[in-house]
Length: 68
Image: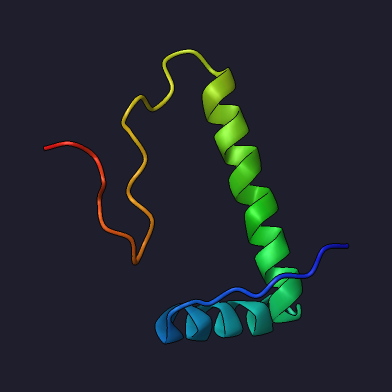
């Protein structure tokens, strides 16, 4: 397994901690679960015709680099 450092805002950490406790998981397991669910959803969207064609929202904490 690969290890890496992840910096997240305090409010997101609080939400993760709360959700992990509700699901009886460690924070690490909760993050892995959410990533797997998110990737499965993205895969389902790209496979289905007529899926959401809107561009994804910019990542939190990063400026929007798209041309105006």
